[in-house]
Amino acid sequence: MNATPELDHQLLDTVERIIRMVVDEEIELIKHGLDVSAVRWKSALQVVTDTDLRIERRLATALRQVLPGGVVGEESGTEDAWALDGHTWIIDPIDGTAEFVNHSTAYSTVVALWSHGALEAGWIYAPSRAQMWRTRRSDGCQLNGYHVLRDSTAIGISITAEEYIRDGLRQIVQHIMAAGVHVFPCTTVSLDYTRIAAGELAGAIYDWDKPWDHAAGVLLCQEAGLQVMHLDGNAYDPARRWTAPLLIATPQCWNILASLANHARAKASLP
Image 1 (cartoon, helix red, strand yellow):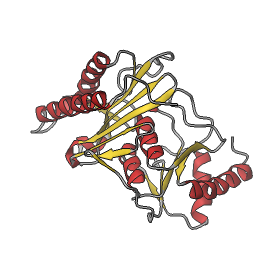
Image 2 (cartoon, helix red, strand yellow):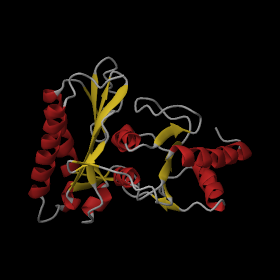
Image 3 (cartoon, one colour):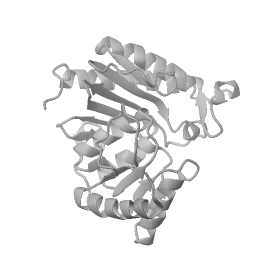
């Protein structure tokens, strides 16, 4: 299946310019620091800033002008706004907001394009690290305009962070660790996806299903040659609720990790 006809390199370049422009302008506005009133708790573990809200709002407007469609965004309450017969922009204005607030470089802006039921393109922009990752289905992945050749020597996998991990995945991870696999709790998931695509991590296993956290990174890893599939055999679909954890690894490693994970699931009678 070929990429959607509208998605040529000119459109990819246009979207990249929009993301850079919006994010750079918003970061410039708070270069002397965020006002305390601009940071709020949206849950017991998550914060949101006025910068998150402005970036998402501006990106949603600009991207729909480039290619009309739905918008599924983390901060806008549009989680179910899928254009099932057209295009949908998936936006995380700041992945790693807590890191952003604490002046860490470990944050990014993430955009993915889902078109007629398939992931078509993704962008992960880490401005403080001067990194723009982008990918298009069947066209590989790039960092700052250069195609990425994945290093295959990495060890260790990224896992859901301790404060978010569910009991089912915790038991799977314990079983995997007992087999000698190194695990690293995820902080900013989009940046861990870039590390997997580059070969700095061997893979990942995650158990939460927010599409803005995964869509662009999944496509990036697929285009880097990794296998991405749920432990129950279902392919990744950003518009569908997960019924089992998502495992990302090279095809050979995927089978080994899946065998370990599914043994743990069966032993604990996990879904």
